[in-house]
Image 1 (cartoon, rainbow, N blue to C red):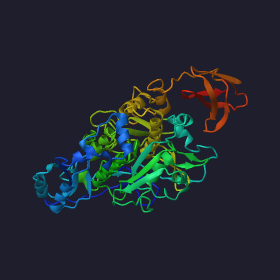
Image 2 (image 1 turned 120 degrees about the vertical axis):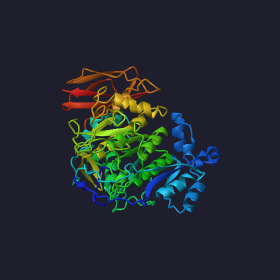
Image 3 (image 1 turned 45 degrees about the horizontal axis):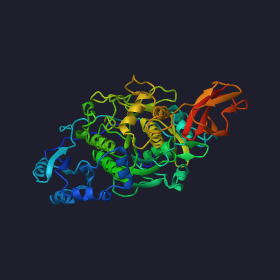
Image 4 (image 1 turned 135 degrees about the vertical axis):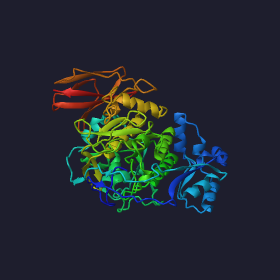
Length: 541
């Protein structure tokens, strides 16, 4: 991953860690994945899909026209037992990849390959000779806890929400309601107790969680790294008058897959297992601010040529998640200023939506990792605020820097957008529209991809399509001093005026509005018609 700290300490500092790796003997074991040939009992699954998937998961597939496949069927338990009978310890397996992970010697790999239920065995090792470990760069800036920063509704989060044009979606009524987000990360200390997550808890928004590292439900332990809680806060955190996340009304599953104390290849499997569970629960979005390039054991470390979107196990698993209709977002990585300045995996996969980091002024954050991937695909896909980004931890607003923060800011926007759009629009089409409506499109850069994302503009690009109401609202004069008039093809029921801090100023039931008493500045209009809500900006001079 691209953030390291002592467990239980939410403060992050820039540090270089060098890990010396000794030479390995011929009897050294290595992590391998044993792929099974088939799923003999898959017919039982097809006859009763609810035995493996929730109705919400099945509904997602139905809405998007995604058929059930053998990947969805459970793994054959007798095959797992057969591997155990050969003397192997099996703790991690994947139904999507159809196999189990074990540590094995060369001779044991040969033995496994010869079993009649085994298709093949693939090692996680990329550099058999081992050798000098690559440097590990920490690029997650130190958290600075603060008291209330402002008395306004959105508080410190306002600018980063406005930068990617999510607040217009909020004003239109799309705040993530009915959408389910899985945050797969380190751990979530303080989420069960902190005031910043109280609204989430009180409203029943945390639907469940699991720790795939130690195979327990222990996700809130204060000994766990707080990175996951910080990322969750950027999406769903809420402190009245101080901070609002990008999807404050979404539901959440919280999964721990990253042990911050070590960097081991098994963490890729933990993530895949978490993604499979998220799929079972029917999540709409997976947000992950983790990435992999080097490991404590350098035999498993990647080169840039491996960042082609299909080499790493986690990239393959992430792609399968997208193919199940889940909108999957990943942070690009924080190595932009290091000797390894490229994106990490699985941000290299073409079907995941990779997020780079920018400053509040809209320029690339210096630490944000560079694309393209090794196959030449443009990465990142787009960008959001990652420098001095506002979030919450425990009961306080704080700031942090990293693509780790840019990613959840964008993931919350994706959840709001999915809520706003018809359920049958393909995720690939939505990803494409987001790229096309980003600030640099059709141009791109190695750090920003197609530029700063624009979620409301993307929503507008669908208006008039798939039964979403046509956007024909016009405001004139604009700018204006005393009065504005509104015209639309639909009959106006009411007009709400919001200031740029998210506050409702007043509601009017007229197409001509007196604005003389308003302070100078920019305002949002929510025009309610029988066909839906239309959002437009105007400037009071």
